[in-house]
Length: 263
Ligand SMILES: O=C(O)CCC(=O)C(=O)O
Image (cartoon, rainbow, N blue to C red):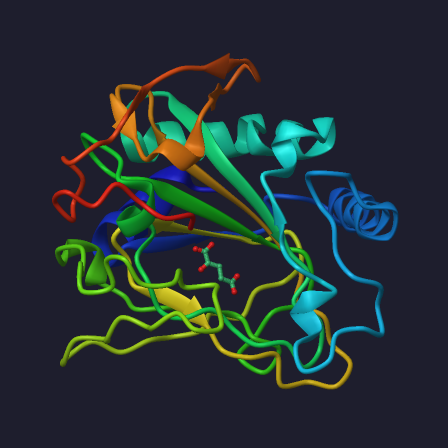
């Protein structure tokens, strides 16, 4: 892996792709781990109605797993994986801190996530967040791969959705892709990581296949020198796996007095 090239791509277009960051055995272990979490559930952390009761929304019975690093050692280990830490150190120019993890099952037929900018939610100051989105299946546009809009990392945060439902909510509103910019959906293989800037406009379409899952494990990070972040992301996690504290962004985030919503 050429870290310098990864950073160059990241700076030029707002995202980069690190191929094979996880190997086949690691992808299999993560998928099996989250299948177990889905089947057995984790009271107070990950719960859903029985499969078969999805009615119109398959995501009702396969919701994303929010912040598994708070109850799963495996998820925390991948959040602070040294291979990821090395890339983030090159991007931030200093050590990173983990702030959030998510696992998406995105089964066949499931809806996508509205176009958004992560920094709108995370409200990191100073600086921004960076996402590491790891494919756990073959991913392309048909099964609802991530759509990124190159170069939008240089645009300001679009604050027009302040106070509205979040991007994952079926009632959430997408932010508009500005004229002159165009989304693209990189094809990824299991274990590849798409790494992107907190201001980059991104989202996903629905999984239009009848038989192909689109699982992914996502972590968000900030630079160690970050002083505040929205109230939903505490405690943060140092790259040695220990919890660390930072302040809460109040009134000074990219959308003025807006104090945040869950991502
Ligand atoms: O994986 C997806 O479909 C969307 C994920 C996303 O937008 C995010 O992690 O910010």
